[in-house]
Length: 139
Image 1: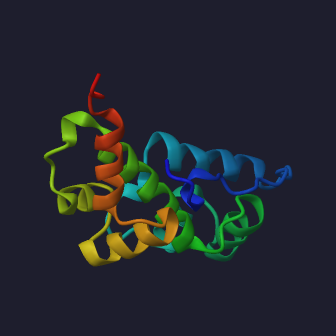
Image 2: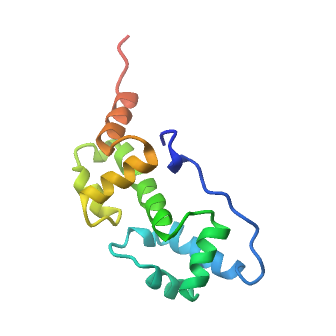
């Protein structure tokens, strides 16, 4: 990824015995099930899936994972997946709107704002850089 915040993983703090299983469940939901790609995902819905009250999930997201809030966590995982898709040569002709929708955004404007905030460039500029990097070099 570019040198923006999405390329840096938030600091992790050691888990306590109380948060260990919840943290593991949250990690599985985020990494394996890619729950962040679900449009309209709410803190409550995620808390229900993790098996925690909302306030404890909010605390875990902030204190254990180092995200500012739930929306920052969502943006991180969604933009991470969008970057993967934007780099994929097989998806080069896929519209950015389609990628935005596939990673869980309901609006291209929200996607563009989140992408710009995290990556410090627009999705189309990011894709152009990736295509330029993978293009055959003249000899």
